[in-house]
Image 1 (cartoon, rainbow over the protein chains, first blue to last red):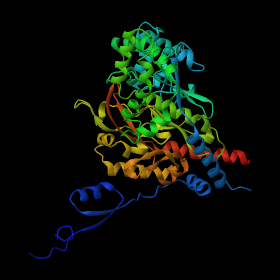
Image 2: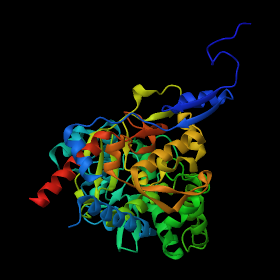
Image 3: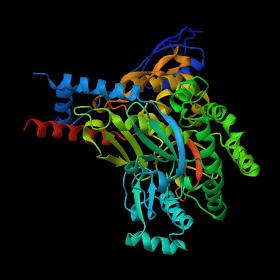
Image 4: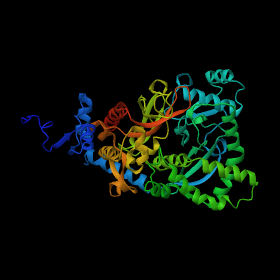
Length: 58
Length: 421
């Protein structure tokens, strides 16, 4: 069998860092794949008033 | 001169300290008209921010109508609606009367209410009594003859028995019960069975030695044993009692109330006093109890029970109650993830509420509107799902809408401008 360049299909042990949506990492864990979860959310976009308020108050 | 960030941090720390040091003793029960300051015979209280009668959701309209009939304020639904239209019967938010109510939160003059006292600050808060189990209750916006008959039994038989037992037992410490219950599988919102059992343990000795008609005591005892969520209402009143002294602290950006009326979701913020900041209520994601029910027949998010999340219970400590995660096909891992998100939007932690599966880490407390707006993470509530025409149909979870917090932050900024002008 030729070596598959896609690591998800090659059969070699996977090392996954899952960034953001946890559901994806959880599904891999259920398949006995080792996953490191990185908590991340896309930055919230605020209008100029809220951005200025947050800069001043927090 | 102290900069604004320091002023806010100092005010928030003070707010949290007030919430932490407040006590919550269940001290009495009695008819709302006699117990709740300002209550009147023609007033019917409801959950959530204020809303005109005509704009109420189905469960509220049904609950208010049922209460009007039960109180004898009207002899028919049509007569009740006419009197509600004319203002002869009035509606008002529970929160305006220091009350909180689960679901529709329907409290009328004869409704027995529990009294919870914060002895540290000398204030009281109130909540109606659980109507027991079942999918069709007044609090879920449903009424029929059997439900109204049960309300009368609660007012005429159960409440006097409960009152006498409570007065014999002395004050029952609800905060102490919460601290133990969260280590016994409760998150004290969607699950309060451990708290209820701990409470009954306190009440049984005096209940069993009451000098009252045996049949009244026996039926009251059976009602308590059958009502596994009985203590939730006292927990809600406890949360309100703890939060009231934390209101109106200048510069504090901590949330002091969250509530929903099935149309709008509202929050109050300490420095901003009594103003509700609202946004459309969201639909609850969860498990429907029967196959015939789905998202199409559900009402939007409803009830004052989010007062539990306001003090860091419920959805904020989901890992305490693994069974609750099953409503949303969740698990311990996802529940811990949810608590970590709530930690990001809270100002501090509560040593009285510890999460066993997180190595007894203290739960988050003190929702800071600045952090909510900055992160976009909004409070997660565990909650029930109500049918749009009344009745309990499921349970699950829902996130508060971000818009409330944005509106509150803008108002906070305007308040600061006004103070410096």
